[in-house]
Amino acid sequence: MEITTTPYKHCDLVKVTGRIDSATSPKLGEVLEKIVEDGKYKIVLDLSSVDFISSAGMRELITTQKICKRYNRGELILATVPEKIYYALDLAGFTKLFRIADDVVSAVGNL
Image 1: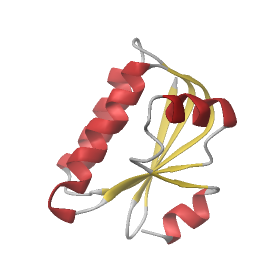
Image 2: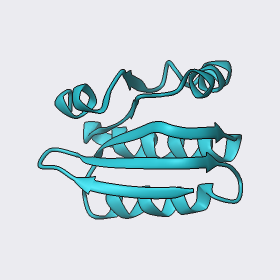
Image 3: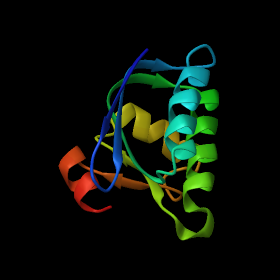
Image 4: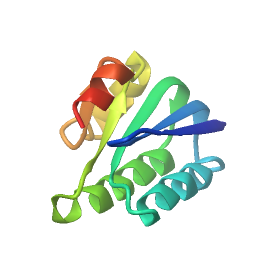
């Protein structure tokens, strides 16, 4: 799994490439935690290059979402979610908990 972060004026963009599973999700959690610790609570997660997400990966997403939404400080928006990843998120009931954008530009523009 590869993770790149791009800071913008109003939010941070995190692009993930590869698989998010029990072996790689702690790395994603560390990256997201560092962003939040820096006082940035508006995050766009680009999932366009993600092949697979496990329950461990979903746990990292929900943990970050809870921290970002606490006291109405921000939000974690999922962008360019592949169909099979969307299906897994929907099956777990997560699509109701996140805003999902069709592309990164509209996700960054909505924060």
